Length: 297
Image 1 (cartoon, rainbow, N blue to C red):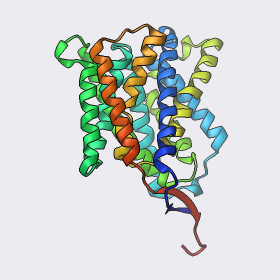
Image 2 (cartoon, one colour; image 1 turned 135 degrees about the horizontal axis):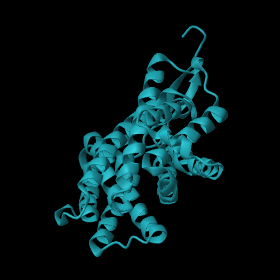
Image 3 (cartoon, rainbow, N blue to C red; image 1 turned 135 degrees about the vertical axis):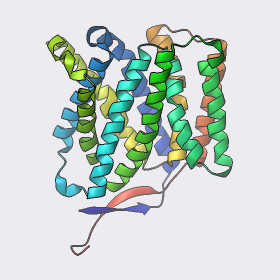
């Protein structure tokens, strides 16, 4: 069994930010690629296939053992899995009804809430700035957004807030990627409960292979990077940094899905980018590493 002890941060904010940025890029590319699978399997089926393959990959690669977990760590990992399944399924439903940039901006309200609640002093400026950017990206006053899609995106936002808090807690309690190797199978089971497995009869060898490749891009790589990033950043800084995700979504939506943004959306991207830069400069936390316990501890 191991306990986790903090060590002084070494460029923690910078390395944590780099990990988070690569994660966001993978997420948005994965969502854009998912559009093709959605045409064949639907939103729930696509999310279920991604999560199931991710669970298989992590179980085979990491091979978690019960002795690696305290009771508290195991609870954290199970709850993280439920949150992961929820955010995946709900956000896929939102993307099916809203432009990628709009859905991502609404989902970002979850990380923004974490940043507001966890931020202190001047750091609260960055979530506020990001919030302005989200408003410009979504233009709620126009009334053009699908209300059902908005509801799904807000549900995903709540799950994402829980995901951030639980990812940091589980990552601090368990070494390496072991937490993901437990949470991802739970996420796959959660998706199964919500009906994702009903698409099994529609699967072909080509779709199964496509799902495997997509699972690596989303969620295996980005979730692993986010876990590592949250060992280097505060939850407030990480939540604010996620403001950059709608900007990535806008760019990928434009390039890959031909979703052309208006000038207000572009201005909103400027606000969230500024907030993300501010979060990176003020958000380092002590890096957590694992230390072996003495036999009597």
